Image (cartoon, rainbow, N blue to C red; front, side, top):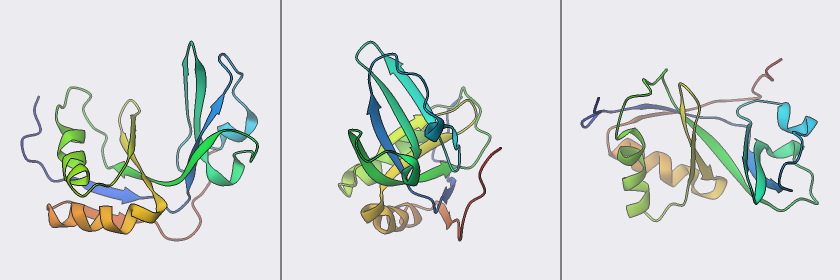
Length: 141
């Protein structure tokens, strides 16, 4: 199933996240279990990567960020094609760096905090709806 030239509703979450590097096969630390707005753990033979709220990531770890998590409103059918390319191509043209990841029903774009306003303006220019979460987001329990 193709998206054609579909316009998306995007939500920029207020709470910053970071990506941190742990040793290969590391256990999931407690600080990575917050989940608001997003936590993600990825393993490969060389590393364990954690995306988690920035305020919980220990300062002594190799890390990047802060980023704001942009959620593509869904749920998205897992068979859709072109969702990310339609949103990322205009950012690439504007030279805005991003990190992407997907969960079962949602695609996420992590935008460096200092590029978020420009990214939102680029998306709006291309017809997408962009809203920002205000205030403190609730933790998932």
